[in-house]
Image (spheres, rainbow, N blue to C red):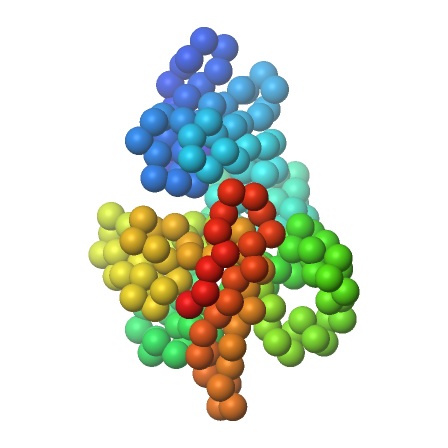
Length: 203
């Protein structure tokens, strides 16, 4: 976790620090080295194993996270490039967000199970309508907000309605259904919440 820029200090048998998955003024993050588990007692209430940590902090699929930990368990994982181009036009940024959410859905068992429960299982249909899933990882792929590039990217995404003023994704925990024009431009998005304690949204 030190490689992710998180400072931890001893707290009994555990370690504590600030959770990177929400605006933590805590610290709220509890790490149990003996159990190899972590948990946030704050706003996001997330937690899991070292695999979950790598998946969330690096926006990796389960399989990729396993491969990374297997091949180089002691080596830091390279940060993936941001999915948004800083100099792109607004319509291109929206397309990039839609594409990111679409790829996230394809690697999310939770989202795919929800679609299956609604009878939406055909890959061509999912691909044609670019159905997506907002799994809280878009913000992790952006430069840090205290850097100029990160602040500018977050500002643009806020202006476009993708991020809230708090910095959280508007569609957190939601299946995202984009609305396209005949020319393929993104006119809006609708979010259908599938995880608890998060509100549905539309842009």
